[in-house]
Amino acid sequence: MGANYGLRVTNTIKRTVSTSSAQTAATNASTEYVRVISDTDGVHIAFGANPTATTSSTYLGANDPEIFKIDGGMKIAAIVASSTANLYIDELSEWERNFLTIKFFIGTSQQKKWLLNMSKT
Image (cartoon, rainbow, N blue to C red; front, side, top):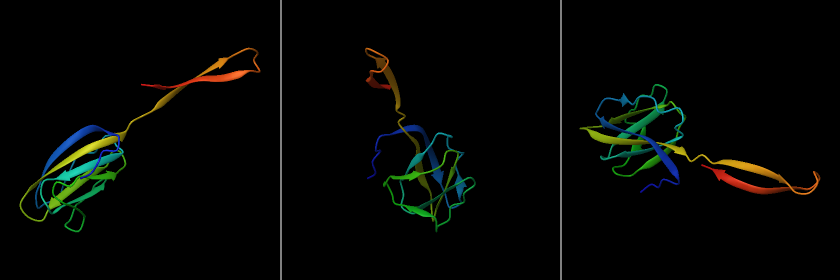
């Protein structure tokens, strides 16, 4: 069983996979990772600008989530050797941490103190 590791889901795609390779639309430009889960053994996936999955592509086991690092805008192609399967794809991004740093001057201009470094949400 895979884990999320603090990534946020930005979009979810469900695809029916068959014996012909088919690809998703392009992922969001901000997508950094995808979590992919198949409900059937024997699903193969490929990533790229115009990917084609074959039965030699990356193999997914049934109900075993996998997380892959991708570039935003990539597509995911999938194929299954026989019958059909469902493929669930979560587009993931890292939480952004923007830090606001405020300077306070105490006493003369020569005496500086960093008083606060707080997270901006």
